[in-house]
Length: 462
Image (cartoon, rainbow, N blue to C red):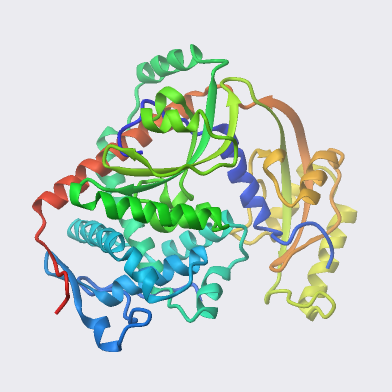
């Protein structure tokens, strides 16, 4: 939100789902048989490089704005508009660019200011970090690895705009972490006080929310920001994925987490947001909500009573046999894929119990496939067939081979318990307080950068 909230609690559900996602990456196709490197961004160089849709090529080199000497071209705006159109399903047309141009330009100005400040502080974002962020976006949107790049390529759209945006987000997050470092220590007294306040709210309703925040601090920008928010909402209603749109266009620190801000009480939200959320059904998306500093678009993902949420939690161990090439035709596997299946079947027959599975998995798993993905909340696991397996497989029994595009997994369930995950923990309180401080610092720093910057917006280009 645009103002610091009184609370920002990261739910146990979210922590459990993180473990589930790590597990599901091992077999994204469910239960059954059978270019990530990027170029470093050069200092001061405009991103993009493609002409805007429906405009002459000469227009693409025209200057839209100059930010502390760095040029933002019409091509940069067109590239970002393409990115939005591909992500949401909007038709790629001159009308789309015209509708989005003003807000996209302001977003690019903010990104350029953030990158400049990160460069001034010598913060470097590695290609591997960008590749990991793209993979996380794909995971949050139930996409296969590489699907995002393939989607853009199929539409004839460069991924440079997405890479530039992610680079800016990662650089800004790193800058904030470095800046808030001396203030990262949360005292036991602060945690105890917050837990006391939280305990008084047990039984009240709280809401699990996603948010897309669109800044509009300049009074002259309010109409454009609202129009942009309305365009976002119309595409969400038409089926665009909320996490993907939030990752690309939300301007708060939850953007790369798909806009996920966790469980919130009404008194922890901006009053205008709280009033709307309290009347929304689960699954709904709000209209633009005017809040200090801009507009919020919120998605109500779930409701619950504070302190009372029972869930089935399992722990497990998994062994993973990777394929050297992706499995594209289950009826015609390669020799290496056949050998991997034989090894997985052998593990099913010979490995019994979690201790044996853990020892065995440590000898075969690649570095990116954890032996233990942590606590997994079964209610949040997809596909349904895999969720049923987690809920019904006898403890200590090893599964049949679970085949995916990238390899084969076998797992053993170690424990299965009913837990009240609505209970408030010290770790959650610490994380919430830190998130509040980081978000407040982000807003303050952006205001300072705008105040000190030389920004020349060209209405007609040159």
